[in-house]
Length: 95
Image 1 (cartoon, rainbow, N blue to C red):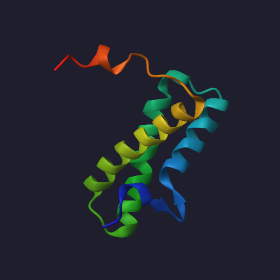
Image 2: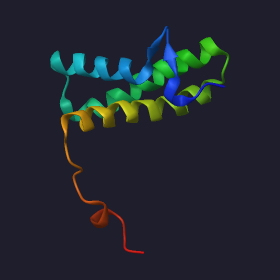
Image 3: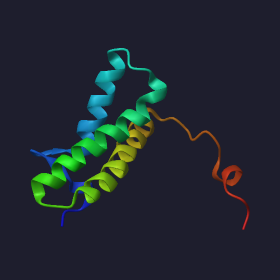
């Protein structure tokens, strides 16, 4: 079984495919607020395709695609240097 981080289609890493595709869509006028949703949808589509090509269950592709879309979306935000909306101590209750 392949690792989710090395999952690729025809030699291209899926997070890279998703990140470039979302950037291209935004440059064509796609609303930025829907970019994470587009990243998840593209991640699912790519991962399901990779799962079918590698003989994995489709459910594995769907689950991997959600994570890969989130990875691509988070990597883009990290590359821009955007801070988190709220600090962790405001989001999580104290222990």
